[in-house]
Length: 161
Image 1 (tube, rainbow, N blue to C red):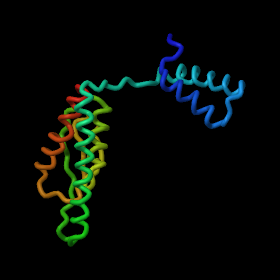
Image 2: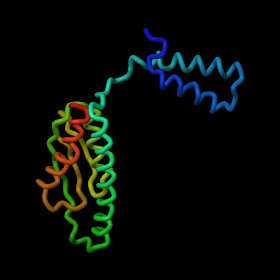
Image 3: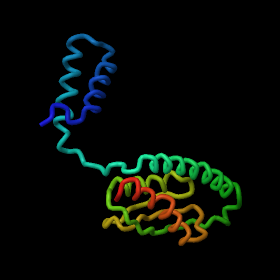
Image 4: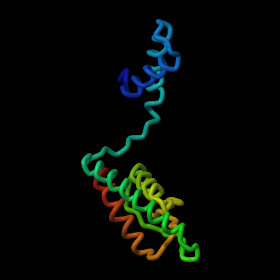
């Protein structure tokens, strides 16, 4: 068994303990080392292994694309809200998902929710469907295609899931 199974977490615990106590006395240093060693050892068996990022440059591109989508959607939602409420067509859509990992599904659902005008409502128990509410749903098939192409496909490539 490794003494530091999570070295970053150990370092973080050590530093945070000293910062919270605003002291580098011998007693606080010993206690900080104790926490930095024992807490990661105790919780290491509870960790879930997440998929590794296989394509980091694609991940960076994905984040930039999502930021752009958030900005564009903010403007679109603002224009929808300013206009007559009668023109809004809210609705729910069931989007089939083909991602295996919980992390990938979480990132997909979070991305949809971060984009103004849509919110992830639920993931089916079998993890095959993502239920999304849209503020203005013109074309259900177009929303499904957009989520699958813009978000799901890159997530699958980034994590290989």
